[in-house]
Length: 291
Image (cartoon, rainbow, N blue to C red; front, side, top):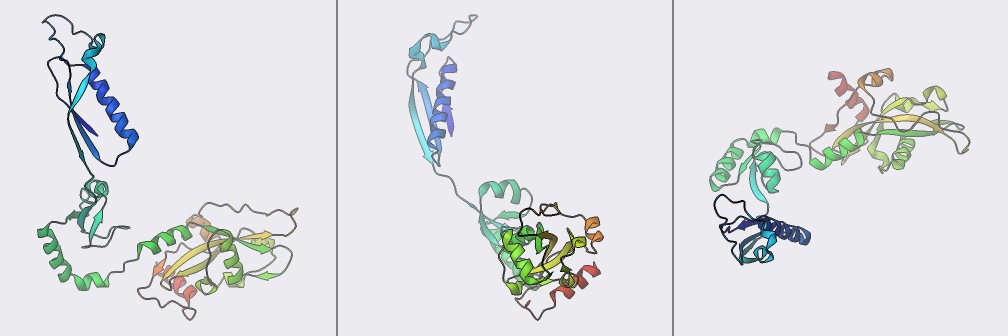
């Protein structure tokens, strides 16, 4: 909302108060548009003689009356079309022509030199550049934003792997799948892969309580996400308590080393070829060793 006031010789605080009231009304209505009011006094205040203090207009109520001379409403300009100069997560890839929120464009993309306005000249200029760089662009590994988001959420979890403290068990996909479901992650059996060390864990064994375990989740047969689980013995008997707290902060590199683990990053494959025949655990272990 903007208000332009046509001021007569005597400046009045009442004019400011009236403008503020108009602002409050416009804000309350929450109209998705810009409103411009031009106001003037109905009765002009007398000119204050030189050397004397100006009188408060509120002393004479008639001087607080105003009329609308002009009123203008314009709708928002809408999104802004830009050309991305680099890959911007959640927005697009280099040389993509996208429509984005004007605030995002002006405060981030344009000022950060991550994008330029989609002018006719720049559209042609960057289209030609994109054509020249098509081989280089095709060779780049670009992970879809949806997969990146899922990967961040899953890698931030330390899943309590709930196992029985009374009956014999061996850690397998079924236990991992059930534990994931209890924290709100529902997966198919063939998308879960245990590391070599995890698949040999058996119990009950209270020496393994709170032990960190590495396993992997494959999303869309393309994105391998390394996850962590923590062994937690439980019982159907409510009088028996869990030995270790289930809510744990993300372990540090030193914490991982205590359990014979190393930090790992997700892996993205360009085509959907990661299935049961793919040795995910060995591949990820060798990949982490190279780093």
